[in-house]
Image (cartoon, rainbow, N blue to C red; front, side, top):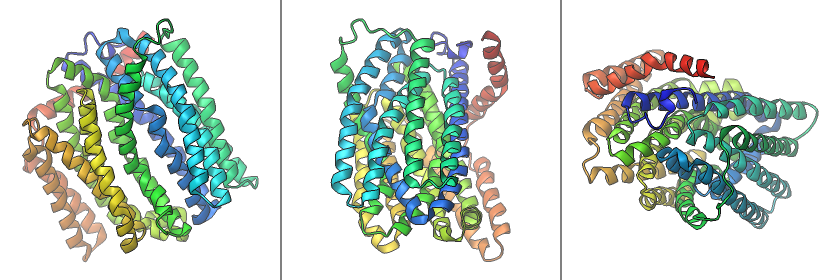
Length: 500
């Protein structure tokens, strides 16, 4: 793999481990950033060509199969990262076992997705879309498996290569189909075909270029893989429900399709922005697993940094969204999506509880606390589901976002308490001070909005980032850690290229 930072035998050194996380997070963020960029362009075309009703239906089908996706993976991504991260010699066996389990489970989930869609949907067009998206589910699940192998072996550059090839391919083919007169069914079919092509390519790269898959004795311990995967899959399904549930449930609580399109477009903002914390957490899991095994405290250091940085940076995103969000959405997507711009302002604030919950969820997984992590996610999912109908009846699309926010906040708060009980998190510096800064900066921004939006935004950002230093949110150790990542980072990349 070309660098010491990626060598598990030497990654006990904090600098090497941090460099490994940073480098692989950069590849993952690059891949997801590229994906989000091309999908953003694609979303503009889809929204304008299809209109709010069909665009909402398309995103409903997308959210439907993405809600089933964790069932198809049954938590194997975390199992791969944890087992390979702890001992690289486990790789050939774990890769073979997880691939076999994934294929078996995919067949079952594919059948469940189609049957559930046909039973719950009466709209013929919606039924057809759900069937096509169910085919996409299998292809995407296998492609995701290959991405998870890349992450587990800390070679996420292959993930970046896949995204650079297949995401533009889907967008180009979809746009050609739209301008040739094709409709929502055509772009859905293209979506499914491209994911199947990517899955074939990904599995080939893993088996031919990444690891020599060990099929001999693959049945030994397969039951344990199913069991651990089942526990992990339940938690991941509940976490994923907090992302995809707002659009799926909104269609079934009496909302019209036009409002569904407004909510779907607003939730795309969340899907675009949340990949930053996801990239860091995904890249960190193999390293965190080794840290948890050694009990050297680096896993907690990572969590504390993510909680503070996430709250501060996502508050900044929220302030910017308050200032320009409605205008930007209406300008890009057209006057028909004016409501989506106002809903998107709320959506951006979901990033704070999401990052907190997701970071601690991954830390729990790295420590092998599968049931505890699932229990925290279950509480969040229950709060969201139970409040959804009531809040939608009061606030329409905005109510769906508020329900998701309550669910994510419950998930994050309960996760924090599980670490607080053992005094592993300094809540004052890690949680309370960043949240106080967020509240203060929002107050300043709202107070000055009556004078000028363009005065309010800089003042709010100044209050936020100035407060980071005045309130002592960051420690000297964290600033040194950040510098240790920035300073050798370019040298790490050059070393890897030279070794190749």
